[in-house]
Image (cartoon, rainbow, N blue to C red):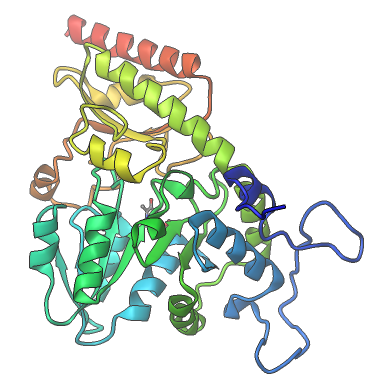
Length: 389
Ligand SMILES: *Cc1c(COP(=O)(O)O)cnc(C)c1O
């Protein structure tokens, strides 16, 4: 029988299981030990060396999900982001970053890189020319995030990968918003894939973790730095993450489907001014998204008509909760201008088209009819108030 690559849900359920040789239990046992016998000089197991049995094995699941040679788990998304960047950047090097980035990554660069003597440039836009003109003699890394937060802009994976190859620059992506279910950047030539596993990989708003997938050669470099930087994840949480990943394929596909239907519903609604969702034909990068994503994700953003009070709308929602984080099985909503992007100056927000009325919607797995009913009743409440005023 020909050995075929297992499908997504089989990878989610089985790849990287720790086998319980002693009792033959159905699920991976947790190895909480911080001390292991010296098996040989090559492999000294220690939690901060990222190589306990649970860490090692879950790395294999991450690698399989991303179609990579190697995978590693971190204590948070930012531990993965900072370790990846600091593994390949040193004093005197330069990094090109796309202009729309997760706030924590932006802060890491703006607040820390100067002290380390690492130079950086943000691109003006997301097209090839914007990236190419930001590249310098000493550029060592190009860093992107697609789809981006909160406007779901799309950056061309192959365009960036080719620029990297042409200039011999390592390319990195924060693939959190897409999740490995919807986008596998390594297949498009990107070198290093980073996730905040706090989001879709965890999926239940109860785990903080990060992950990296890449070639073994790049991983060796990252592993060498990671044990100095110390951002490992405790084994109990590694086990929790393994458990969550078993349903990643099912969850994310349900979220894709809900988000696509809700985006269409919102787009048709007379009280909604604009919907940002890469799966909509009206999205300026829909074709690009289609060429590199297998699903469009569970995140969307929208603006109500200017006359309506977006704050009040959020308060009127009953099922959809106002909440900071994203990607859980429960639907959540937030105002980027008031939360995730509040530290940005109003001019910078305007420049990035993040209006005060913009709402970012993380679509969960609830039944579509209940989500629509909630949106409808909240819209009715704010339109009525508008009429009374
Ligand atoms: C949340 C997030 C991060 C940071 O992850 P933490 O687990 O909070 O450290 C990085 N990138 C993106 C796109 C995120 O949404």
